[in-house]
Length: 383
Image (cartoon, rainbow, N blue to C red; front, side, top):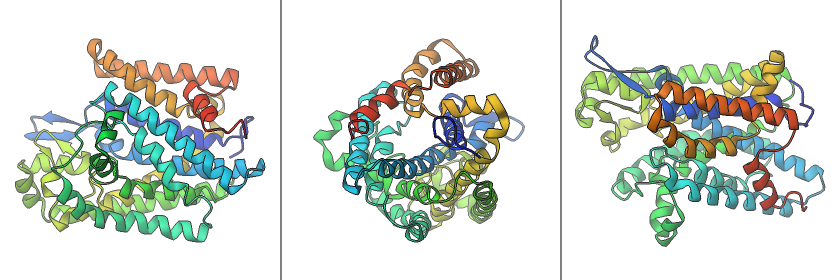
């Protein structure tokens, strides 16, 4: 792995493209479909691969990028206080963008507000040594879901019910509760993905040895946690199905995708055995560690392979330089596409937009529009 001509890690940018495409897939395609042969719903390829994992990868890469970004600012002579100011301004701009776009597409759980606030939280950790960041990230992902579960069960009736917007600032307690506990990306737990990314940024990401460790370690932990959660859940699948009001077949699908034709597993939240569910977006310890391990493995793969793919790898990496622009663009574009086209057509149109963006950025070497705007408003250039 080597740095690109712009001084960026191409493997990191390419992994970010994979996260964006994974979230696109989860928003375009169904996570399950009805199969008359089995008498219920079964996961789709998107449900198997992208559900919950793509957004977790996005958050882990945010932490990696933040760590590298802060070191870059320090090399330019900024003090720790100035770096923190830049981070907080960036967090505010991204969160404001998320609130502005919140009402545009309520069918998609907008991650941008949580993404921005993640930077604000991580500002308190960016200067911690690696020997503290590593254990902190692991313990955060393993233990905060245990504290989250009873809080979520207690506060479940008091959900925001829509993407956060500026209007919700009139109800700050409910908004904060949704962002931290009851929302789709509860920061109480999801900050652990950012911490993990910060820790990963301390490794020599340009060296194949680190990438191999990421790939091998992430794959092993991902496989072990999924197997442990799946086999543990099979022991109480009947009770899980009964509590959630669905058939065993639908409950089995919901275990893998987060929901099925029969509903979701939220009704089981009050049961302590919920902690063993390997379900995407369940925010259980098993699911959280599994998603984090998948993210580490994917980062390792792209660090190893991107430069070997030649021009194709360069294009994939170029698209990863525009995560905010692509994500915000698909929030606006997708509802329009879905009025006229089938999911497969919508998917290929979004892929074409990504390719066009990649070709433009690779040719010009410039920043994408929203990335340039965030950079300007956060005061990086002025400093």
